[in-house]
Amino acid sequence: MSTEEQLLVRRIREGTVIDHIDAGKALLVLKALGITGKEGNVVTVAMNVPSIKLRKKDIIKIEGRLLAADETNKIALIAPRATINIISEYKVKEKRRVDLPDRFVGVFNCPNPSCISNAEKSIASRIEVLDKEKQKLRCWYCGRMLEVNELISSIY
Ligand SMILES: [Zn+2]
Picture 1 (spheres, rainbow, N blue to C red):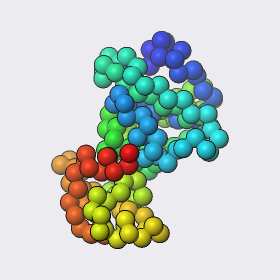
Picture 2: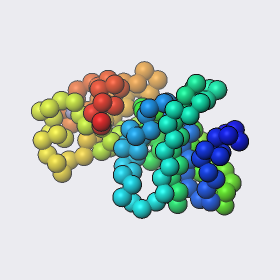
Picture 3: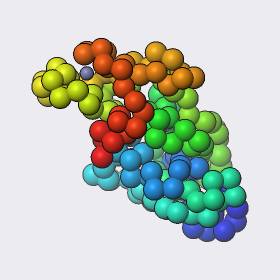
Picture 4: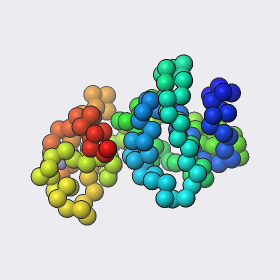
């Protein structure tokens, strides 16, 4: 991060900074992570920040929470170029990228209206990643093959 960006997103003692989110996707990222703001942590969202790599990007900073890889991998379809910075005592303790997980549980809704995961509130959706490179995705319940875009629009 440049000094200018550090000023924009003030330094935090402990927490997670999600950088290089495609511009306009920050709120979707928060939704996929299940962060509503009701948890009480300080959450800072910066949108359309000038970026050399992406031209424009979003940044999210979550104070007091260290997100594990299996949590941040939930955003792999929404923000595939995101970089995760785990901050401890004002220093970057760990820097990692996001990887497609083997499955998404409870992140996206199956677009098939008659799928049991939509009919039964107690059943969390389960989307299997069959091919990580080709991004082949299938609902574990109804077997429908799913497009990345329809999954992303399912969580709006
Ligand atoms: Zn389904």
